[in-house]
Image 1 (cartoon, rainbow, N blue to C red):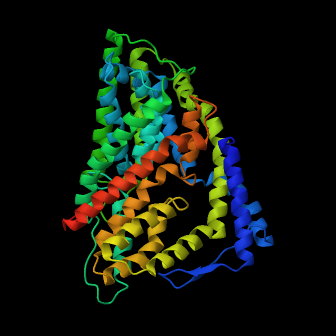
Image 2: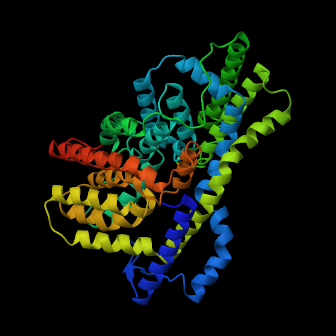
Image 3: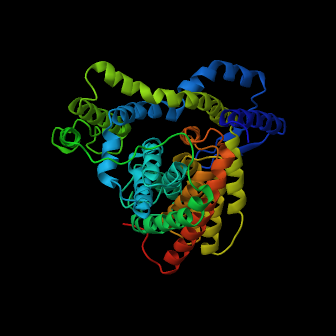
Length: 478
């Protein structure tokens, strides 16, 4: 496999070629929710070439993860450069080689990270690598374990995530297209099943990690080494206490600004769904990490002037240099794919083909899970897929006697399981950048070699769990 940047460039060329072919044959579909016709647009047409020239720079600067990655890395950079993360690992892990506990900790944090949206891809992966290496495991295994936990377990959580209300709203709109439907789909409609699924997904990830990943990767023999354990000095302990006090004060302030009667971080309607708190959660986390790192740095004597802080802020930019190159080509590919309408056309054609079958309700749900997992390889965004798939499948399953919350639950299983193996994931460039920090020869094929077992195992186990839950007629949620 070529360099990740070259891979995304080749994928862009493939999208351009396919858009040209399908445009010649006039491929088009109809959006089920609006009745609008969507036709494939050629990127080799005069208008397509003009579009690309006008938007090449905007495609890169508007690439969704770019700003989030940079902002998050500022805070992480200060926390790591000041020594705060290192001292937390030393006091939390010490010189104990508790490998199984560290693996479980990374998996659980990955599964719970969807509470803050996509922040787990940015924040957890480098920390997981450090934790794994500290207990004598391959740091690349830490990145892969954290990655599949965040990606494949995106819907499994014991806490309501930001995507639950969005999916439920779309499901309700799709169900109301049938005049006979009188129900109501709430954000917690899948809560019971997804909470129980957290245990199932965690167990599968842990089993695959212990059975296949760690033996396959073996021992890490790269250039990045961890220092030998040394007990915390009195100055380090005092600095740690001060930084924790500062962190607690920061968290208390954010909570007060969000949940008190003052509540400036809540939305205009008093809720959290579209509030500044949810929209800025990643920035708030980065700011908190940066303030905590600064408190530790100045308390421990590591920082003396603002120049030291700036050096900490700039440290991650050395790593991100490679990321910027990969992200540029990835951004062009994603933008060209969206402009050409290839994603929607292929997905809607497949959905219409699947809806033409007439199997039993349970068999139809299983086929729907597999179909969603396949479509997820080209359209990763859950809300983007569900915005048109819901209007095809929710009414279809209602007519088969399947409630909308069950249909949505089946969709979320397929939507999550194959996230780890698609090259169209927005955060794929960042994952490859993190991995190439430890091994410069790694490519997307290397990552696929490590992750395909996770996706297939999770898809099989989660689907089986869904079938058992459905046959027992247990409620999906509240």
